[in-house]
Length: 247
Image 1 (tube, rainbow, N blue to C red):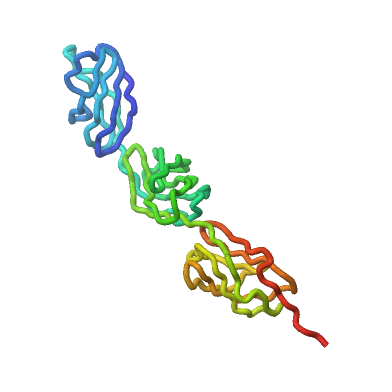
Image 2 (image 1 turned 135 degrees about the horizontal axis):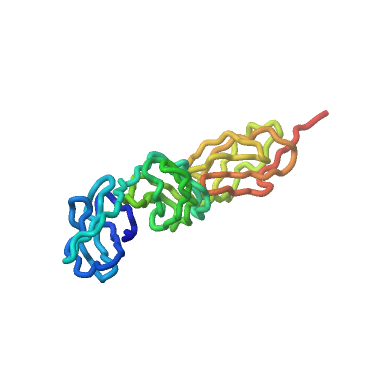
């Protein structure tokens, strides 16, 4: 007499089907000492809604002919998340996030707002999941669904790619040290600014402006790259290093 599924939430509410023989006219299905709610019954199956419980319990079916042999049902507690490896990323999704916690071994889905992804179970304390595409930039709740239930409590922020529209000034000495204002969009979460691949010190002024100081560089026009959690924007040849005079 198989039982499917053989595990469910400690809070109850799991739809369970028990198959076997001579099951018609079932009058009771017990999970331990608690009665389940019968929702369907045929001579070869009984479908019920599990009651709440804990641990491992015996499941029996009672019909006019008597009570069946017991089957084991395992109650599983709701998952608990302790950390996300990244709290933000591109609106396009595609990056991998690690979730740590407890009770994660039966995880079937991870939701980022209204979008759901299927995780890879590493262990009972760790999942990895590829973040789905976000509906829009901004924060969304993250929930993990397991046999034991659903756990919420973390927020993940989708971030749009930055854009660069202008630099002022557009040139300066090869020795560096030029204060440059970079304007664009989605700059509030900027993580780095580079001039020809060399990191530059910077400060975020607003979501549309960054103040940076040029590092030393070779004479000529160079690319300026602004990077945030969403991605990177490259302003090709946007700044020109000018060599000093020599006599």
